[in-house]
Amino acid sequence: MTEPIIELQDVHVRFKTRTSGLFRKSYVDALAGVSFTVERGQTLGIVGESGSGKSTAAKVLVGLEQPTSGRVVIAGEPVTTFTAPVRRRLGRILSVVFQDPATALNARMTIRDALLDPMQVHRVGAPARRDRRVRELIGLVGLPTSALDALPGQLSGGQRQRVAIARALALDPQVIVADEPTSALDVSVRAQILNLLTDLKNELGLGMVFISHDIQTVRYLSDEIVVMNKGRIVEHGPATQVFDHPADDYTRSLLGAAPSLLEHRPLT
Image 1 (cartoon, rainbow, N blue to C red):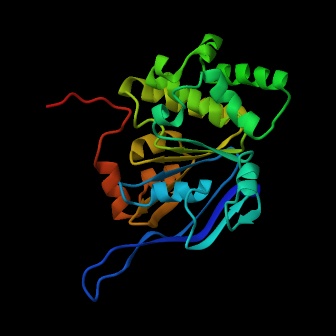
Image 2 (cartoon, rainbow, N blue to C red):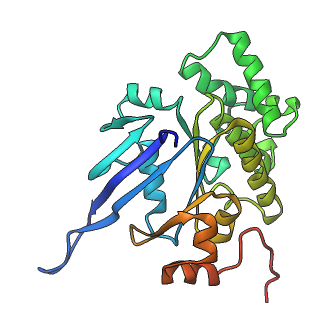
């Protein structure tokens, strides 16, 4: 087995709450004892309903949320605080694709400048090498080079998400964290983006953490599945095992509940 690129070890995240009453808890556990690993070339799917803790887990992974206790290990090194130097180093290891590409991209920056920005911030390559890399990136996500001169508002939602994926690849990361990357898109383009992520994973050997409340979409992409409920992992295993032989009632309820985000069913 290869060494995990990302590892969460017994991570807890506890938030203070306003309370009324002597015996009410003054805190809520957003994560309670969460542990998992991600290797290069592996897709780990994290699934659960709203409030299950899956997005908090994503924030811990990328340094947007500090654990109350437990350890985050990136490329074999424990990360205790996400200082600016640590963030710069981690930018070369993992990157993020957010839910809504309309807010992830600067509306006033051309697509070319949006793709150049991570390389300029991290001082990667000479200007000529950066320009070549920008053209490589736009081709990787299936967009023409003419898109480089456009502003985000001139592109469709699916095209903007392709740009956001290209931007996440700019520093050649080992792992991408994709937090609900298709939920803001039209049904007609969701499958295209999922297929793109699968192709990029296979072509580049990427590791991926794919987060969604749609268990069927997670099934489509993932090698391993983590099912979360109320801040805890209730089931964790290979995708085929979790879906064919779910061990937890909550997993079975997710499987039987909502139609897939990939499907379109007429309103009745």
